[in-house]
Each structure stands twice: as C-alpha cells, then as structure tokens.
Image 1 (cartoon, rainbow, N blue to C red):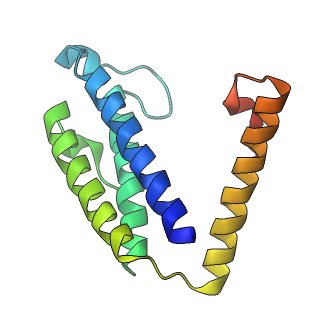
Image 2 (image 1 turned 135 degrees about the vertical axis):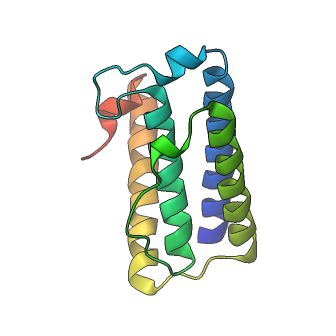
Length: 138
C-alpha cells in the first residue's frame, strides 16, 4: 500500500517538475540567472535547490548520506539542469518500482505525513479553500 502511494506521489512530482522546467524554458538566459534577492537568488538557484532535494532523498533511499547539496554554480543553463533532473527522476522511478523497504519508524512517520496531508487537503476542499499553502503545517 505505501509503495503504491510513494509511486503515485513520485509520478505526480515528475509531471509537475516537467511543467515547471518547460515553463522556465520560455525565459532568456539573462532572466534565468537574474538575481531576485530571495532565499535562492535566481530561478536557476531555486531549480537546483529543488533538484538537489530530490537527489538527497534518492541518496537516502539508497542508504547514502551526502554531506552537501548540489551546487547551483555547476549549472549555467537550463538544459544541464534538466538533464541531471531527468536522471534523478529515472533513478527514483526505478527504485520505487522495485518496492521500497523502510525501517518501521520511518514507515510510520511517512505514513502519518501522507495521512495528515490528505486530511488537510480534504478539509480544504470541503471548506472551499483554494489556497493550499495556508494549510501546510510547519
């Protein structure tokens, strides 16, 4: 059951990430690298941060613990980010297709998180809320 949920979530994630990357292709190289004064200064930095998080989770699923995130400076253009990102997603899909074995505490925490998110989403739909960001418990 949990493996099906994980596979579904990763398939959705792959679809959503492809849409984001496709949209980013509409920007000029200057716009892509332009600093915006936010946590992750440019769109490139934000995308590499997101890609890095996916890679870190994949590494953890494989029993490795990287000591550093992916460095955004290694990617000067969107095409190189997409290439690395697609590779990470393919490796993740291959891993989830095998069935993921989680230690019981990790499985319990993952299941609780999924259940909590599902309840929040259902409550928001029932209340007619459109903005999901307001529901996220932090």
